[in-house]
Amino acid sequence: MSVYRVDVVVLGGGAMGSAAAWALARRGVETVLLERFAAGHTRGASHGASRIFRLVYPDVGYIRLAQRALAGWRELEELTGTSLLTVTGGLEHGGDPVLDQVAEAAAEAGVGARWLDPREAAQRWPGLRFDTRVLFHPESGRLHADRSVAALQENAAKHGAEVRHETPVRALTVHGEDDVEIRTDDDVYLARRVVVAAGAWTEKLLGGVVPLPALRVTQEQPAHFASLLPPAPDGTDAPDGGAGTGVREAWPSFVHVPDAGSADAHAFHGGVYGLYTPGEGVKVGFHGIGPVVDPDRRDFTAEPTRLATLREYVRQWLPGADPDSFHPISCTYTTTPDAHFVLDRHGPVVVAAGFSGHGFKFVPAIGAVLADLAVDGTRPDPRFASTR
Image (cartoon, rainbow, N blue to C red):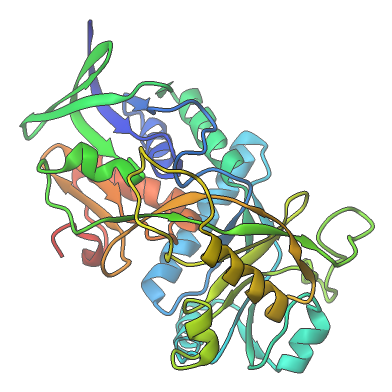
């Protein structure tokens, strides 16, 4: 068994751990990234071709974090020559009053969002049905998850990070403020810091080591539905929206939040998100309502009742998608009781967890936050404390 001394070991090679390794390596910190599975695996929460990116939230703090992330995504694209973020425009609609908070926070943060009449929205986006006003935010779009993780790891390695896949961690032991030991099957790492970004496996690694809020791990079950809309001549989502918007009109990313007391809110688990990916179709999913699972004992199979409900939503609300032509997919959510993230440090242990199904858009910004925590202990927003 070999023994290595290193400044920082990052545990978890998904989006968050890869972003932390990228940020640390670019600061000249000696960094080793350990991932238990093979590159490109589908066991966690960072795989696939599509994640929503948006700059609107009912909270200005999250909008500022997304704005910081946007700059990071564009920088990563430039450094790696990889296309990661496609601007499609985004929509929020439904009767829930939270949309007024979203609009107010967007205005305060200087995000270009505006209300549209439902008839106008239906003319622009015939693939969706609207029964209320629609909040349109043109800077939103789609991130390619697999490419993003690969790009982060590739550029981290170019800056000196060592990336090791298929290297499960068997034990983590804290010996002091600047002394933590990480054991794998073959090696021992003695580090000043460890960044734990293990997603659904966080409690298995850190239970009893640092304080954590309750983390609920669920198997989420969205699906891709075939689009019934004609493709654009160039094979992209649709022709440009005009007026120099650069927005592809056929399939924006969308979030539908019916009024909490309505029949639709009850029938469709409080709301739905969706986006289109060329070659895969329209991804539609409920948010955080999947069955609780052990991440090492998942079946990756869509629960029939929830799948039937998802198809019924497509039938009622997405006239541009085929409810009878679909492909279920599976990922994990690790959710905190308040849906805020955990970004904190205890002694030599930095923890990133509980991204609650809405973290991917923030990845480059969160990587920088984790590097700050590891290097000099600079803490982010107090709402991210593990002992909040």
